Image (cartoon, rainbow, N blue to C red; front, side, top):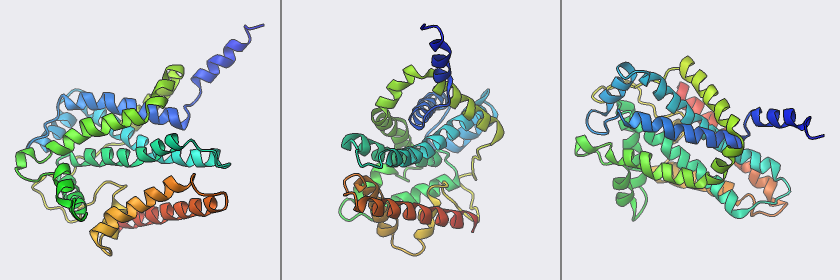
Length: 291
């Protein structure tokens, strides 16, 4: 009687991954591909040249770099989608506080990882984005100078990318592995999720290139940060750095975190406010990208 159940079990193991497994697989593949890239990357004054060497000289370096990039983007998109799916599945308000907190904390940590990855290109765009981030950190009263110098030090030039490199390699990776440890453990029961994710990323890597940007000593007409940072760059034209780059993002994060805590009547209002804020930021990002 147990024989017919085998095909069902096999189909279940080979099915398309859930959002949690997709994110965990993306993280694991980001880490593995990042280790390969780190063997050829120079975080010193030759960062931009080392990226070009990975693209042009290292065997299959272009593929590994693209794979790493798209795995990081998939992880970021997956983190946002995972939050939305939790809110949808837990419409009755039955949230586990610590699990929800970990899911919310995952988002800024993934953003930091993607942002430092953009900076580590060593391009004019990357260094400019680092300078903007340093200015935002410096705008925090009292702690600004300490925060700024803990993220990026433009001088001396040969060590300018060392701190972003260490955060990208150690701080962000350790935090992400901790916050996703439960989902990473589930991958052992769903190995096909890793295979499907790797296949998707391989297709993206083969189909879509990842630019290296302008040389660090170039002066491009328009310097644009990563796609998820463009909205903040646009808001900075109208609002002071502390409000645009620190207080508003923190308020948005606090709003999302507070949704499960709110009562049954207030919860739909908070969800609507979070959705509206996300839509507005997406619109600003598109405006800033194509302007």
